[in-house]
Length: 369
Image (tube, rainbow, N blue to C red; front, side):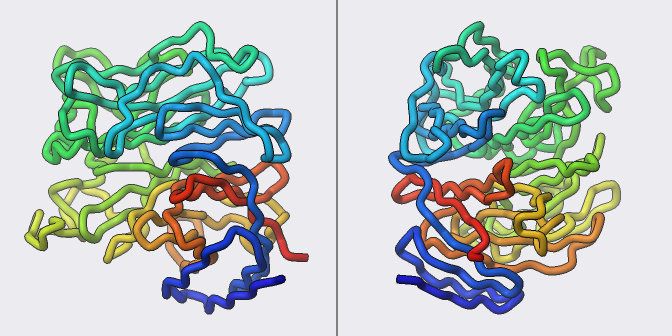
């Protein structure tokens, strides 16, 4: 049986969809939704290996290699112990740009010391379904660890021979503006974990800092276009989720400026703009709890080429955003699965893979024709 739902352009009503198979019709295309892989707690990150297989990080602390058909998967051993609590766990996973030669896999995860935790970035060589020669490439000093177990970030991308990764503010809001703390920032390192000489900031001791941007609340989306524009999505509080372009040395304002308010309804600040602080390209107010993102640059869905795909946890949908260079044009709700949408990834053939929760699973979108 086929199921057809029509979403008018710029329409954002919620429409529960309690199955993972059928046909969805949007303003410009119709696509088929099919189950791809299941059996996860919360699938958090996805990346493709050169042979078309997928690596999937599960918040519970497990990393999987998913076969091409999606029907089988194997757990990768050698993953470090993670703090699986609240928003913590095994976060993003990405492979080195030269993976065919070095087989390096990078992960982000919440690391625990005593009753406190913080985000770590590490890498290992994937050999016979095990991470070997494991190396920590970013770890904060213990003084920055907190007991809150929220706002870890963290997404990873590679661009221009560097690794970029996001770290949330750990709910220590003011530290997002402090260039001597690592939280509430986007960081940039070499592939080996060294701090590049052309990074924009220095530490209090005069040494170069890994910080690339600051004033970021809890960035859980990061993607780069083929022509080198880095896009980021971050959670606002109650209102003020943001879509930003990442540029060297920029202050994105949190918490001095925001379009959101506290969850209890009180003010965070009187300001939505301030000199020297960047405005978002777009903000979602009220919040949709924006999370993972991907840039669609493929001919399979040719009408979506150049669009940005973003996921919603709170409102449980997949959205596409039309931009022209650095200008927001329009947005469309394209898929409502009836459960939290954690991540989105474009496969090597242009298919769109969507990670869902409750239950943890991955579906694949392909053109209906």
